[in-house]
Image (cartoon, rainbow, N blue to C red; front, side, top):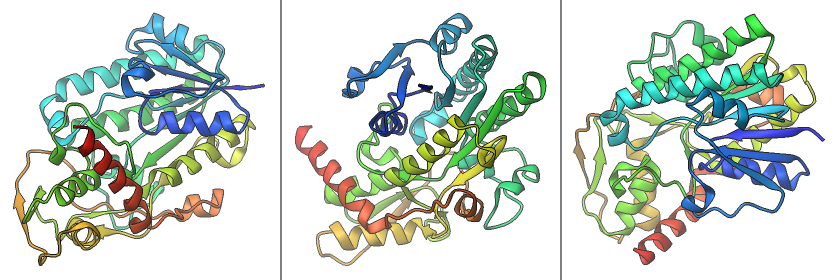
Length: 329
């Protein structure tokens, strides 16, 4: 039986992908610098955990031993404030991780890597909605984190060219759901959906938005279970050496967009205290895209995947998690 290894596997997406793969009968190895118990994760029996620092080449080589396909999620990232205040660490750590992981593929004779890039590589797209083909026309991302993820895509191409290692690049777009914690973030500083839910449920009034132009900023939200389904489909095709995903890239997103203001109004309608909706805007130093509008025709046609969970349906379990977290604090 072939083995799937997930770097960053105790993270929000990686841990869920590991469980689904294991439930489908695959052998799964999880590698992370953060132990599962630190993230209050108890993996199902049969999922192997390896504790390694993937920035160190010798550890990366050991970590990847025995894998047939690598799902590469490991990266230094965090909340809006973290991403702004730790830019030098982020580009250093992410460069070191990739510079160790890709040679480890070669030394371990691993034929395929699935690389988790970022929707943020399209920080400056040539058009809206943008497609995978537009990656060749983009201006380099201004954000250090987004730039580091774009660099990872170049690692894929370079190691295909020189060593024949196949790749699939995936770009998640605004995943949300229960359990999305961040590095020491205050409630208002985590990703926008849990942040706004936390504010509304805790009774903040008027509702506070971080950043400029919430009436213009757009996001194509994808519920985490839908993103995991797409990811598992790609991994299983890679395990079969399927040409449909070989040396190609896919945007995992939603072709329905909401402005951040629309999102706030929906959350207020579902969980507000009955007062008329009102809001304020607080500027932030974060460096992100104003608009994020993606065309997902390619993944629909090639894999038969599209998101099935509506924003409202995804908000319900996310809100319950926010409420349960508030009770524990």
